[in-house]
Image 1 (cartoon, rainbow, N blue to C red):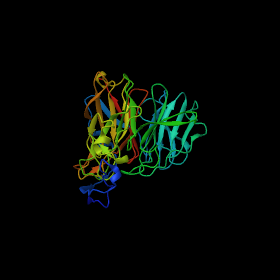
Image 2 (image 1 turned 90 degrees about the horizontal axis):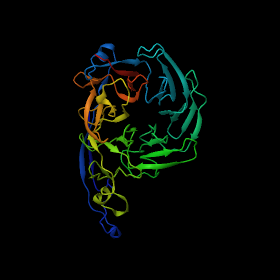
Image 3 (image 1 turned 45 degrees about the vertical axis):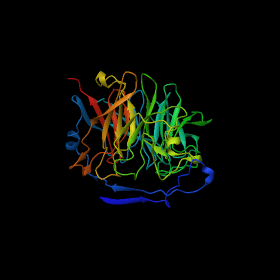
Image 4 (image 1 turned 60 degrees about the horizontal axis):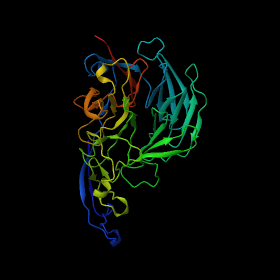
Length: 397
């Protein structure tokens, strides 16, 4: 474990302007935080370790596929074909369970280009996002893909967050998440730290919401159609700050990053634009619906609407918590359920699958990443550290 102490002084911080910005002078600002780095040791995902994963009664976790190196995002076709990206290799791989036993028995690479990551399927086509590029390909009868066709080649540069993700709204509009280039800074490109609406013919795109540091997992409530996303908090504000934010994402909404966070707390390293106070800026932003433990790193999110799980899971969200590195005691490394009420609003979090942290939380055999609902109603979850895709299924009594 490494201990770093970050002391932010007036020289290192953006200054706070008076309400009369024309006076143009600096106030002294000083803040300090204790920052920790702890990365649990990586150990093998043996069958014995998988067997000890904990889930609610009736659920069973098995390996759908393994030895996949660094599987990231997942997309499932209506016939059950599974597509998984590997950002480091820039590949998309097809996985098929031909005998319906809950484990893939066919594996085939079907696409390759630099930095392929986000996946979404619509009308027999697979859309694939890289850092600056968005591609589309036709899905063939055997699950293979036609040649990738580039729709966009001018998405923002990556910086710290290169993990573009895709999802289709119920009305067929494609959304693309673009993270920030930095931990906390004033971006030069208005498309960084946003959620974009993208036209699938490559004819243009618009900023749907801004002030989102890195919202990788997002989706629409199956009954209300409201859009929700899980945003990553700022690092180096201490072990318990910034919390991860579950937001209801609205058109034109500003979610505060990098200037304010949570319920309007000020980030002293970055002053709001135009001489605004933090309070003035916070009043114009959307506040999160729920907060989750800091640095847990939410990645994938899916609303469950399948037939396999008990009825009580309908319209709840399941989130992959990739796991922390910027705190003394690890957080995340689990699947979390988000309970939604009858009005379609999130009410509380509940652990869904745990146990990937072992040896008194000093080691891990799973950094859960992408998540998708399979055609049979189970959930598939990728682990980009250990090369596994897990299957979470409910076995009736």
